[in-house]
Length: 145
Image (tube, rainbow, N blue to C red):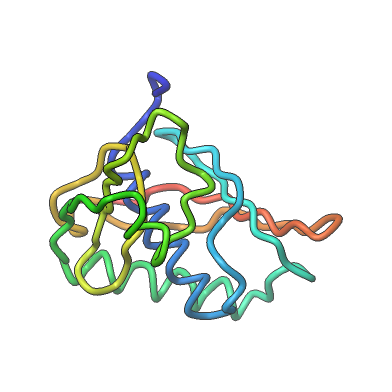
């Protein structure tokens, strides 16, 4: 992991991804660059977001953060995990036992990264920009507070 890796930012990415799934039903980001100061997630999409959508995404993400949900891990055999989750972004070395990160009942996702213990530790998220080009929506965000 990079020296700029931040468990708060990585946990915020999980919440942002689940919010995008719930709002638009287009899947999680296919690419992400997570750093301490600012991060970005790329989604297969057909347009840029409206200001109202950006405001609603921020509201939903920050509502989950403020709920101070527990963040826990569980382990599933690869065969079982494959029936529930897309394992395409996990590295080969993830092995036959897959780690699932759960943020309360809001999100569950296979992941090898470090996370906070409760969503409230994140502080808050602010979307700083979005853009759309060639079928890709990019959302850039920072932690606030």
